[in-house]
Length: 128
Image (cartoon, rainbow, N blue to C red; front, side):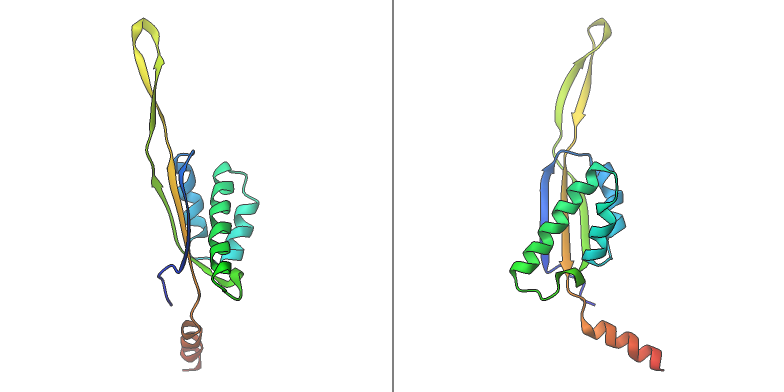
């Protein structure tokens, strides 16, 4: 199976912490694009909406490049990396200040077509 992503999309500087997005990306990694969309659609998390948008964008990029069936693409790369933090000061008692970190994330998803060679290899193994 070809594990190199052929069609990609990313959302950089997403206004959400990476800790909130990574479990969602782990959930869809390795699944078909249509199944991943169905999983994300019914999740109550705000991060699921962001990941869903990036996945739809990657599917649209594949459609622009004349892929026959976009739903049969596999999510081979789903990454959430930390972006830059906006730092603010919150005044506290006795003249002190606490640092508030407003975190951002870079969400990227890569799709690839499933090779027929991989499916044929499974069939040959079952025949033996």
